[in-house]
Image (cartoon, rainbow, N blue to C red; front, side, top):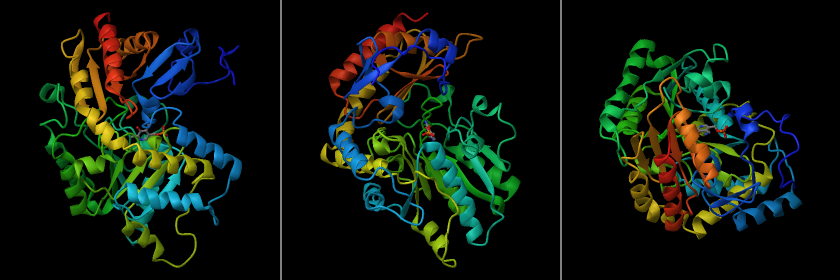
Length: 438
Ligand code: PMP
């Protein structure tokens, strides 16, 4: 395994990266354990973002590592089309337990993007199967991020991610986002103002008629666009309106799943029942790619009530890959044995105090937090959106902490095994970075 700087970095076209800038001044990680990465120069980097929001149990978790090792030697690959393997079924049952039997079934994918596209296709096919094939319209939300497939991009609400890729899916509409700095700045937990924005769904229904609308998809907390926390009562209201109009409600919990809010999923935190839920990331503790769609029993039953045969013409070669299943099973065991959720809950107020202690530093115009996730918004440099936070990110990395930025928002979401000493180190260093920021 190469632990040195590569001889050439030309051939790898890096995703979501300023390739030219990076290749001039690379940040290369070579190993990871617990709360820390180690970079190519041997420096420790404290992980304030759980990789890309995906390592709740900490890096190189021994139980997960050995489960993966064992499975790769036992069953390297097995199809799940018209056959299967025990771990895929065992994992599905364990996931039903972990999600408190809110759902009846789980469908495996390999990423969050695939989970989103799968959920959208399921919603369309569900309505068709029950004789309401006119319900084809999909409703997303401004500033939503649902991955990079054509479905997810279309319901997503980030202009920059959409603009170069043609007309996208037809028949998509968007709810307004709920971010409101004038009214809700420096809120801890759910903001007070904005619940009524859920009623915008009524406007969309009035425009298109409920009989044309298949599903609404939202992230309970929008992560990738800068930690946008739903106003009090907003998600409950959205649920009521979807139920009233026969529209499926999909929660995209790719980020909020697996303890990010100190509960199993965000739907537990907000006590709102989606009809479907997508997840990925923490499902395998980030060790092996895997995503999933959870569906309510009534959705599965609708497909099963037709003539026998293939019920849903959809799936991936690697759906339910044995090694991913082994990693996910081990992750669930670690959640239980190490009481990951209870630990996260015990750290939450210390974490939030530390995050909000940055108020008053130069350029900080908002701080928001919920569970073990936080956003710190900086004033943009006129004409250079994102530049200020990006220079904070680079300096933070040089100083030995990993943060993440989206536009001029710093997003933080540490592994849930974080301890007070890590929180002190993280925010001690971040404070210095922000103090010295131009
Ligand atoms: N949905 C949400 C809410 C996400 O945050 C992400 C990734 N950050 C995705 C979907 C896409 O997941 P992936 O990158 O695994 O395709």
